[in-house]
Length: 360
Image (cartoon, rainbow, N blue to C red):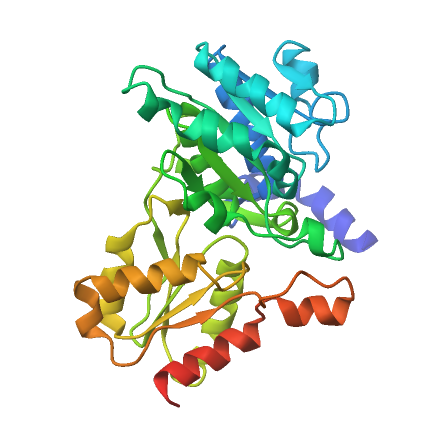
């Protein structure tokens, strides 16, 4: 080491000029990664800054930074008038939010979990969803109801329901179910700007998951149109149609099946209502097989609606086998971990259904 230093010092200017001429390897810049909760936070921050009519209210959204830290830092930036902590009364603060929307503001109403939205369902359905129709288009209700939906972990029957099918059943609502960080940001911004009530179904288990963000998605003008699904993986043998957390499950199952020569096309619905039937039909016409995957109960669920739409439309004639559904089990969610795992779709269940559909 010492000899090397002496050699360098003796070489003087020649060594310095040689270093100046040396070409250093330049690696490509690392892709920006963002957790889903941070993408939601960024979307709300940008829309609060863009439009002074936007405000957020809900339990613990302000001083505590949100139960899941989705609203972190917003209260300090925007203050009490635009980031509002509410009492524990969903019927009350949902009603306040709907009234504010009717008066010309653009509220974001956060439920700590959508299980608690049952307390406010009259405000969501009868007040928010039906008013535009009942007023003959005179009174719009631009409001977003958002929060975690579906099963988390270890929270049992009263805190584990998926409400995608519940709210998608109702005309007058738009129902959105993002999967990754880019979905979360782009769809939430579109939901806030929409003149109709939007039910925005997040997933607690996805909040802390990081995803790569494209350069386009980092713009303040980035939005994703409501009502458009996305093909996350191209395939030729079977169409896997899913939403929210189960996009990850389907992609993982597709990797396993690819090793056995089965190529799955994975569709991330993004929006439950309006449903992008055209995207599903196009895929089914290509693969000739359909498997739907969701965490909710089977009866009258999202998968049931997709199967009915395919049966009633032009893609039915392209099916080489009956469509199959992978769903949660038709019981209230158990508390025990082993029972909970067996009550929700797992990767092995998706693989089994794909092989059953393909008869392999």
